[in-house]
Length: 386
Length: 229
Image 1 (cartoon, each protein chain N blue to C red):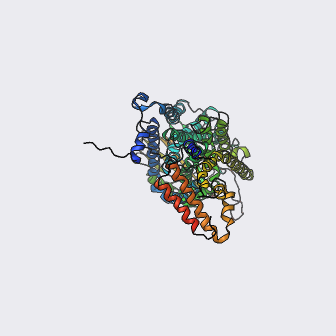
Image 2 (image 1 turned 30 degrees about the horizontal axis):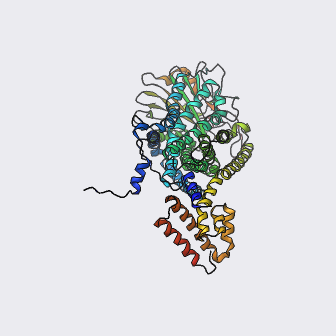
Image 3 (image 1 turned 135 degrees about the vertical axis):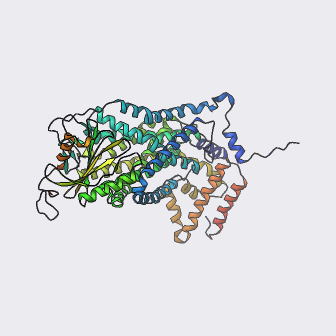
């Protein structure tokens, strides 16, 4: 592979391009700002109306889910290890999920639809199936619409289905955290508010246990499908696969929200259904991850192959860099316990170099030379070499 | 003399976002109008169209004589014939359980029953409701204003009631505790009419009672739930 292949990979993936939300000539910017702004105002009013009574429950749940959110953020950022998304872009996705998709779209649409099911079908139908028939549509569309806006706010960055997968996960994370806090706040008045901490903490625990297999996962699958459906300069359109993935996310969401109705109210069956649905959902998201990450790994290989040709990296290191966790683990473990740390640092430095090369558009800039010299320093620090 | 600065990252970004005049419509990039319009349509559907359709479709679920509304697993009441069941389920129709709140409207009054676990007396429950209402609601919303007055339901169990008043509404709130299940009854109507003293409303309040008579207590001794006063 040559530097031309490197250039092509950088161009195809949009790797290294920056992102700025402030784009007054972009209609998507104004819709984004309006939707998030309204969501913020709505959330403020909701909190303001309840905080005097349910402040302890709200504060405790917000703290718990902030820590939980940080852990999930760290995990999601970890899997974005190839052509990384700019931080501003993933924050924009998270904010849309937490403020726009929830308070401006999902809450209002869900409430109206539940009322309509009650009026037009029956109260029993609304209680049993209403959530399952409403939330998957408006919540997935709500989160996905944020990623659609980001695709047109950052057309030089969001290029591959994997970009959609990662942005969807961050958008779902924002939605998940805010929804968890909302559920905890809704539980506070249980038992007439006489044990608000206990009732909200009970909800917190349930949401913590089931959190990962819900919104983050659904949106990652849905938004990968969205990028396949629309296509980009770096991702050819897949008019069948795209809608199939979007529909899959909605069906998983429907099943999750309908466990009580599907089980006929049997608590044991509900638990079994939840476990089975979670396992199926995790299997699906791993499959989608593997399918969408392949071009990203190819891009990493194309960008870093010239570094192998010039001896900066070894072929084994390139395999670890452009591979999955097995290859990385094998590379780190190969040097034994004593060399493990240095090998980990070599991989991190190689990632830095790949990012700098992408940011420089493949040119050999001063920053690229500095990060390359870091790799040399880490190689020299071991008597065995790389 | 003019000086040309070297293009920095900021200048490069501005060039990236530059929209040529022939690609603009009302100052906006034409290529972004379709996705922005689609999302705006979704927002309009969620925020405007669906709530408007919901408001336009009337809720008509009239209660017939003999209908019993179930509130949670342990409490029931009999709305007046002709009342409109706004939320909640009739007894024996709940597939996956009954919601712990039910509401009917009757001749301008809204009658809401909430049942949930509660360890305490009816007086303590009323005090809890008073505190919560005072903290949650704004100046225009109803608050518990009157002094507690003892009442009995149809099966002789004792509860307490107090008046509620708001800028546009007035009515009453009543509290019962059946065994370890607290019950809040809220009756609200227009500020100009005292709906809570209507015979049909009094009848509905008296009809609120535990579902299962003689359910064992925590000590395992069968008793009438809540204990009559």
